[in-house]
Image (tube, rainbow, N blue to C red; front, top):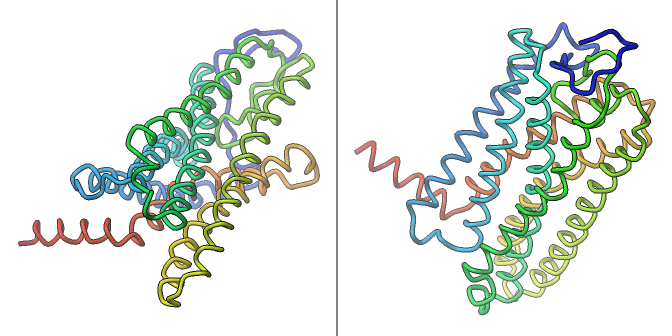
Length: 314
């Protein structure tokens, strides 16, 4: 990096500092983070393998679950290995292009995660409220179109982020007070007015998050209304248990994302280590929880995994 008063359009490297104020705990923080990553990788790969092998699982719910698993694998792999190098090996340097690439994967796949949560909520709504028309409404062609639209939306809205940052001149220190290349943390290093760039990022995130969150909420309200109308109390409890676990995962994802968004917008008095720790949670916890909630608690996937383990044991 050049001197602070010298403008650089494209710096060679940035320095990731991790969690400010908790540097002495980086080694210990890396242990649960690594454990969560291992569970996320094993769990999501298992879901993909089981659904691929089981013909009976080629249903809308499991196809959307596979899309979510791929998203989780990319999202966690784009952050955790580099984060663990920082925590355990003290590898603070990250190349400028690698930083921009990491940023693109984080934000675009976070948007995809939100979109697939919405798609799965729509699937549950159709399955519970219109069970006889489930397979005719959510055909394989319809599922492919929904998945493609979620992917295109994430790429289209967040491709400008690295492009905008590449065009900015940088004349301040290249130290990023974060564990990964967060957009706002990098923008602060520019030596020009970046208010329009910040507004674009916050607007895109708020529009996507609020729209997806609204339609997910509407879907589950309609689902709950249908569940409480079921004649059998046992069936109602079973449906509520399934929906409840799904809602918990969604709430974890959106609550941490909203906290991070509001901290950027209004929370200037929030301690940096709290902000950064929560920002890590919304990238790490959903990929860790999704295979547990959507996989282990789903009877068909659980039965396929147990049957395959029995065959191998025999």
